[in-house]
View 1 (cartoon, rainbow, N blue to C red):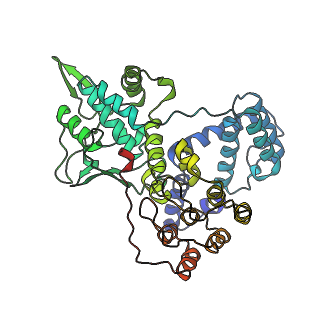
View 2: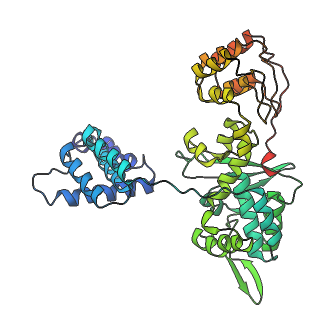
Length: 434
């Protein structure tokens, strides 16, 4: 493939050919490319010790032997995964069939995952109760005000630390009832499209906007009134000169420094185990609070900028109340277990009109599922007493939930059952602050 590209004769084609390698390599993030390049070099260094091994194109057998050598020297499956994906990446770039597609290297990787995987110890999610303790423990110094503003923004906006620390003054756009935070790029934004995070203004002590304004005033920072200016970082390093604290222009707080002087100290001040928390606790805490408050999956995923349901679910910790409030019938509907749901109905162990603590019926749960399960929908709709226009605690009808998910067949079934397309509904998105 590349031989044909490099031997083009036409000058204009040659100009394009010279740029093609750089463009192709750019199909991955710079950090990913660097990781895979180093990984492939390690494979090449190992293979060069054996004259019978060809680095590229490589054979599945020799790649499997290499992966086994990596496995034996590792304490987690990550190095084996990196080695396999690096070899695959290089072969894909060169146009050769990747040996990693063979079952033998795949089996070595699967064995590494089984033998070396450890149970993950997730950090605890942040709560509004802890945030209130932080607020009450502040001494009024600029470093305290900065920490509180950062903590509440991360909690309300589901922000990762780099999304927070990279924000500049120009990224904050205030409005009368809310403010916007522009996220130019992040790890979850693969195509650098940017994202605008909407955060509501509240009248509580934990209002993100009020605490941000307090920090800006104390730090003597001013949001730009137009598109010009505002290039300084929103949260910079703090210096003290002649007894006065100020934010150093052009500086950006690092994760290590922030954890040392802010997170560690603040958690000690409120008698909490700092080892159980990290900056990710604010993101997961905000997401968990919103999810347990009944915010729809679609809105939750959009606000958190997650690429998939699995990633989103990894951040959400269900409250005990929400888990206990679901009946067995609700749980079967949620998981798409049509047979179990049908059995519960036949045994008269299920009530189709029963609601959870968010006043969601089985039909609400069925229509809000990510995967459209027509069998489950039809089962619920056949039940005597089903209310197709019932409102949950947030004013959502089953029809609205199905429409949000883009489930056309479900929408048709609901309308055929008599669902009112003009039924009023509302969505409350500020419950995470209560």
